[in-house]
Every structure is written in C-alpha cells, then in structure tokens.
Length: 196
Image 1 (cartoon, rainbow, N blue to C red):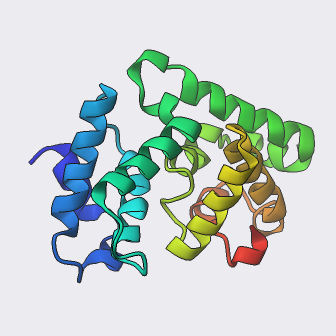
Image 2: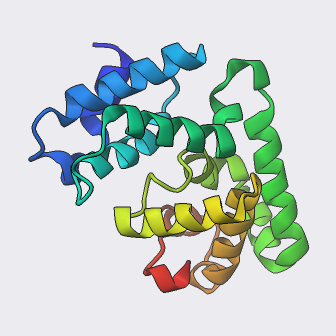
C-alpha cells in the first residue's frame, strides 16, 4: 500500500465512513491530479482533495468528477501548488518566513512568546498552510473560508488569515509556559464562521 492509498483511508474518515466508494474515488482523484500536474504526491494534498470530493456527496449530487477535478486543480494552482511542486523547494520555507514576519510586525508579544518557546512556523504553521486550512476545519467553515479566499484572489491571503487567526486567539496561549504552548497550538481551531 503506497502513501496515497494510506492517506485516502485517513482523509476525513469521520465524515466519510458511511460513503460508499469514497476511498476509491479520492485515491483516483489524487492519482489523476499528480499525473496531470507532473508532480510527486505529498501529504496534505489529500485534505484539500477530500474536501472538494465531499461536494459530490453533499447537496450538489450531480457534480461530475471532472468538475470536482477542475475545482481542485484551480484552487490548488491559485493558493498552494508551489508547496507541492518539487521545482519550488523553498516555497514553503519562504511562506513560513512570511508568516513569522507577519507575527513579528503585527503582534510582537506573540512572536516573542513563540520565539521564547522555540516554536517556529515550521511547527505550528505547516499543516494549516499546506492544507489550506482543510486539515482541521469542518466543511461548512472550510468552504466559507475558501469562498472568501477565492473572492479576494490574493495568493498570500492564507498567510494573512493564519497570522490574524493566531493574533485573534493569542489570549488562549500568550501567557502559557514553553511546555504548554505547543499543546495549546495543536488545539487551535475556528469556533464559527463569524470568527472567519
């Protein structure tokens, strides 16, 4: 069993356990995507693909796989393709540096708390950025956020939003000690669409 097969089983498993053929379909979607885009598969892409695939099983039942693929392809190319393309190896590192700079500029106390605890963006930002927030958000909140991102049409909006989210939630972890802060960051979430 390769990594795509393993990730297909894990992708949104609580939401998809009753959907017949979901695992087979997400696996096919991921394989087609990496083949068409001539990239190697990397973890995180499954979370984005899984969210789009669930549109087929939602109220929009007549969506074709071609339409799902086109949505996935367009979104990934607009916001996160450089992270999955091996030709742009420094892209994620640069993105995480931008996130760090945004925190330093907009919330020096939060930036200093992270630095003191030796928590760098690679630790707390990678899964959020690589998956365009699909890793932890419910579908309703995720599509609400993605709709906002698409309408803004700004490739850096993922970073701005994540920095704003950290600053908005900073009271949850600003005064924590260096041992409690990492755990608090793993519990970071968006409570409602209103918070978005």
